[in-house]
Figure: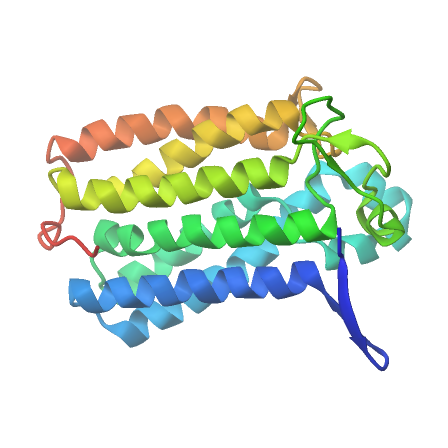
Length: 267
């Protein structure tokens, strides 16, 4: 596709970086609008969102380093690829959650209600971010004969992230972008139509994303590390998150562990 958007003298502007930044901005703006409607402190939510973004970036790159440890340690030059890449989404999630937990409790925000604020924005941001993956050529799919397969021809994509050229591939980036737009729609519709309880949007987001990611992983073709030499890392994490999410939805839906301010929907 188009990994390099344009150049300004010695400065190169890459499509992935632009779309990733756009994804974070869109997601944060969405959360801020919902914070106003839920009656929460907008500045606190803004600060929390910035912390989540920073921790997600660090965590995503850290997990990429761990799952491809041999690659990065055997060839230090590959660390440049690590700096350019977005990393592994679940790594960002695993670091962002405890950071968010610390901030929410430190500033006495309603925990599950605050988590719910960010869920739809996260889905929207992921949809935008995956378009950046498509333009950059990363997170590509396996070879395919389906009529909607995508063929990459840009040599920069091959050099940066190892994208196979001149072969029809499953557009796994588009699969996930479409899935996250569907998740966004379901979350917003659910907040309007179903009985609200704090934590529902957050855990529904994780349930739906984990389910979609588990399926999409069967069509991914890029190297991304294996657990027990059998299952891709993200697919393994998805297999853990789905039942945990179901359990938390049942637990919170019964009224266990509810917070006092949980009856307000931020939609």
